[in-house]
Image (cartoon, rainbow over all chains, first blue to last red; front, side):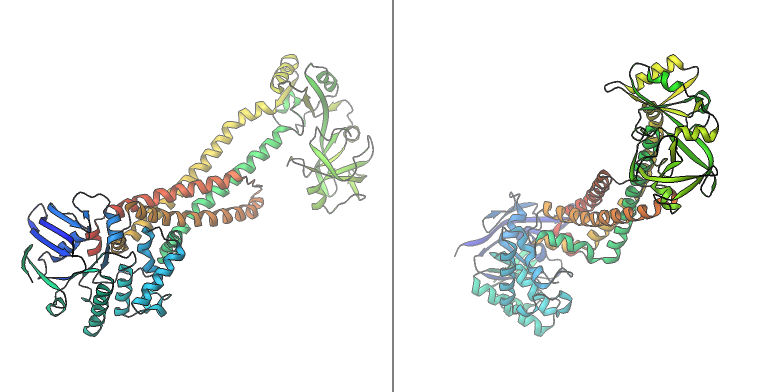
Length: 222
Length: 369
């Protein structure tokens, strides 16, 4: 299988170089792979995930994701819209919009008609099992349900890669299992590359491969 | 859901803040519309007064100053002299006296020739014109309504019964409440056949009224004065400009206060939605889309304010104006101005918060608690 992610000697520092968040990372990830990134707080795992989603740019090194050279490409928003689906620790749904409208938000970047947007959003809600909650406000949903809406939103533009940053970090263990099962199902059924940052080793082991980041470096790739 | 619907929905997430902003801008728009209507009303009332009916200018006695109804009489034979001045198409005498009319101990009685309606800028709406030298009057609609008089009724003038033969309307607010009869009858009541109050002058087609008035001034300036509408307009233009400038000044102040309100609302909105803006960036929204969203939200607030402010300004001024003896005149340009101001305030008010939102690094925005 082809590599969907290629990273060479990636460096990112903050506060005028005093804090090295990433200190020479080399990594390749194959298309359709499920990779967990683990490491203690401040190790650089979230920075690495942000680099993969082009939310942040490296100081030096090479990073190519889904055919986009992120160090030289200027249309990063287009890359994010078309290739990446983010799932955050907090659902970050817009409170005054209905569940279905929240899923339509990423589709404003596409050329879909309003009708098509609605159709796709309802289809995605079906996939995450929340079709009956389509027209409710997020405040009426449980924590797990909101996170499932966030997963549906991540899938809105049919991304090649889902980047999940502690997606079960704010959920109880029972709900966490359901959410993880949902993510893994989506990854398997749609051949979507899934990259997940987590603290939890038990969760990390569900992945095809576990990457550990420590002090901005990959210490084990297993 | 369309992008437009999303923009329209967003400002009302924080209802209190949105309503306060709307009230702020609304006050500014009410001030613009109300002052615009009042200023226009004053200008048109002034123009009616100066215009001296359908005439180009009027002539009065030397001592009468600039009153169109100066009571210092001039000799009646001036009418023929003025009519003979080259460039003058028509000269019509008008005789205004104060006498007892109806229940009023003192009221103005205006005497004109029966064929002088167009020069006096009045038109008969009911009944007919009075006949020369008869005990007949025509009444302004306002006077007739106020005194409950109609055609066929009798009205006591200087102790004599006059028959109401007609009701007239006029664009000249000074004449709308008047009582007219024939000039000969007024002379008879006043006991002075050789005097008149003013002469209304119309110039030949193509002639400059100002030049004809200057000519009359140079010929007869020792005895009479021309009150040229053109001249008066020029003199009064400064006053009107000052009036307009002050009304704009007050409006601007109101708008600046409103604009600060909207900047504050939009800044608060961006501040509170920092994480959400981060999400929008993460899902691929371009900076221009985020900018459009925030400026659009600001415009939604100001356009709602413009609609409400225009309606409130119009209704309030229409009802309250007459109580303050002002008849407001609303022209489309007042509302166009109000909307243009609202849109400019909306763009300016939204732009700064929008630029702040666009400049937020997505990772920082997403970390925002």
